[in-house]
Image (cartoon, rainbow, N blue to C red; front, side, top):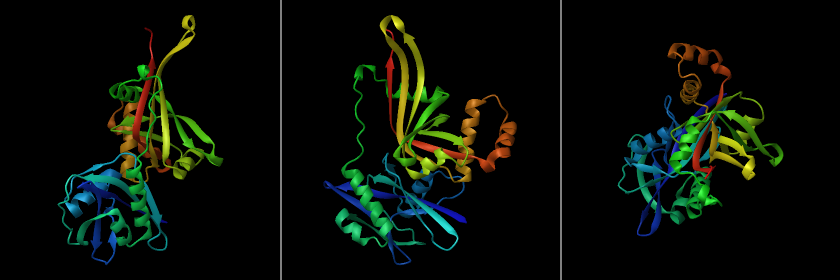
Length: 294
């Protein structure tokens, strides 16, 4: 089986109180959403941003919380994943990449939807429009006096050594599993075996949360517990690109053995790389709570 992967984005802008979407009219005769093949060790966001710049010359801002994957077989013996993000452009000046794209245009949702050629693109645009119309809302903390600052939450994630990953498991039951991890640039990375309940749950659903307890001490005299904890909510995916996997396992290895030499670390990674499974939780919302002595 051959595996291919592309990444792109539903691009929108705001003009005169209206939301407009960018469509590409391709040389091959179809109308599509901006996307392209992953190159080398690019991350998904890096691929999407490069394709957007190459085809439209736009600088965009990715909207956290939206990620949609389309899987199909372009030819026998091949599985292709196309990952779409949601991105906002501050301006509408754009041009077509002459090798592949005839022209681009900005349309309101009602006109953009029927203009797309493929049903999967229409479904992706529908999902993006629904997301923008009603983005996910994370409930406020009941005890606001105990809420930690965003900076303090990230400090906890960076220094923590383990946490509990919560997924939707078999039969609709919640599945929570303790894991080592590393936090880097808005994402949490995990490793493990490629078979079992955990990878199956990751493949079955993108939404997940991860909890790290940084401090826990009982205070018998006051019948309470002194604690500090953080919960990250986001979308999770398995890393199927070798470059992404090597980058992620390198971050994990340096966290847990910072004094190791690069040569020894790389040999150790290479010895088990074929069986390595890694996942990334992209954080959409991070919140923390602390109960300290007065």
